[in-house]
Image 1 (cartoon, rainbow, N blue to C red):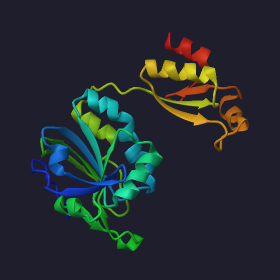
Image 2 (image 1 turned 30 degrees about the vertical axis):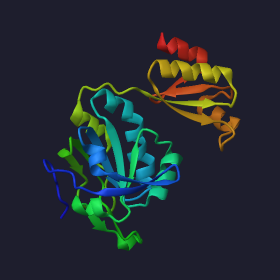
Image 3 (image 1 turned 60 degrees about the vertical axis):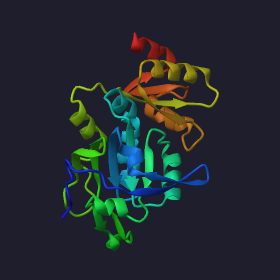
Amino acid sequence: MLNDKTEKNIPLITFKTQQNNQWHDVSTMDIFNHKTVIVFSLPGAYTPTCSSSHLPRFNELAPVFKDNGVDTIVCISVNDTFVMNEWQKDQEAENITMLPDGNGEFTEEMGMLVNKSDLGFGNRSWRYSMLVKDGVIEKMFIEPEVEGDPFEVSDADTMLNYINADAIVPKSATIFSRKGCPHCRRALDLLAKNKVFVEVVELGKGITSRSLRAVSGKSSTPQIFIGGQYIGGADELEQFFK
């Protein structure tokens, strides 16, 4: 049985981390004392749901969480510090503090250590998230105990809804661009000014002009989509915000 530790203190654990090629011990007191912290824990770095949904959305919503009183967002996995550091770089998750629970000590103390030997993983963390205030767990969202890797309640949007159901979430945009394109730079500045989350897809990295024409009907850059709506180029973006 998984253990819901709502209203309990965070376990006193020291994490072995590598920062700038130097070993650093990071304790739970360092992370949680006198702070409001979101923790999300997952089965493993680089695994599909963790990389496509769980980590990216927390990273994306980090500014919104900060506006709503959250000091730090922490990702914990039963992986070593080298794996966690490389995964953070790969995901460009600069808003997330990665904590490697290589020996599973924190996860075991949390009552969230599960055996995934059938997948060749050994002992790993069950997927969950929690809100911690000054070292005390205020709320936990634990995925249901069903077969597989459920992802229903530990997501970033559920946590944000708990913290502030009326929080304003900026729209998400995708911009297709070319390196050195001045109109692309103008569009990115407009999106940043209007606080829109932006994913940049640069032509030449597996994306061709043919691909761009297929999705937008045009091959010029930038081509911008916001919230599933096709906007057009930089001039059309200006009109959209007016």
